[in-house]
Image (tube, rainbow, N blue to C red; front, side, top):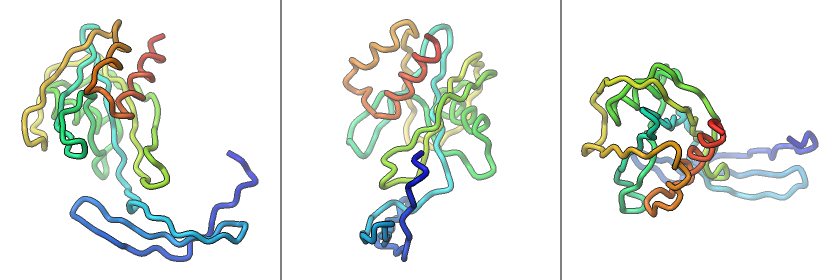
Length: 181
């Protein structure tokens, strides 16, 4: 980080829209050079996300899940919010059990990613889950998720799949490929 950069001064933050999921804020700032701007952002959240790359018998386990934002089904890795007072590993295991019906004996942290940091404060923690064992928990999905197996040795061919396009999934795939190579 450039040590010469001085963070802008925040003058006030106003809520300009709110739903049961999202709160949008207006943030009035003044930069060190005197320029003033008003930015809009999602209200910062204290809850991060965990995305899990599960591997069983040399197969990546993905899910196909409906995504309301694109109005279609997306192929990707299991993911979910980390609950308050829940650790990263505990959350990863819970999400695995809820979404694909497996727990993991070995979970390895890879990287913490931000998504559109100009607008969102939320981060996604990418982990690899191995040594899977059957264990199903009831999740909050409105319909059963289909689990798709993909050979680890052909993992980069996922990039050719038209429904595997969310940036966090692509990042998790590349991080997993780098981890194993």
